[in-house]
Amino acid sequence: MAVAKAACLNHISRESSDIRRLANFYKEIFGFEEIESPDFGFKVIWLNLPGSFPMHLIERNPLTKLPEGPYSSTAAVADPSNLPRGHHICFTISNFDSFVQSLKDKGIQTFQRSLPNGKVRQIFFFDPDG
Image (cartoon, rainbow, N blue to C red):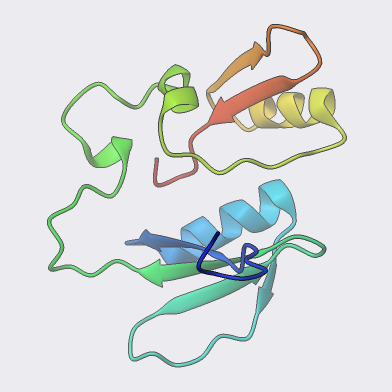
């Protein structure tokens, strides 16, 4: 039996050294809306995806030693074909083909695949932080 009762996703948070750039990306690509956020003593931007979930963008702590993402790594990991087995956020969309074309028009490198039964098509790509 689960310890938490009636658990559901509340929000996703992302740390970034440029939360404005990241907010603009998620607003433009997925339609997130910026909502009021509290003052935590460091920069945050709260976004909401109507009918879905909020995303909290948090200013990166300059004292952390963790890499921000593949783009800040010295290894050749900034390849979207690595994403199916890595950390990722998944969105369901109804306009797959036009969405893929829009990403290509914006110069965003993608990796596509379909599940073996062909019923699910997937596209993987990095946000500006990798």
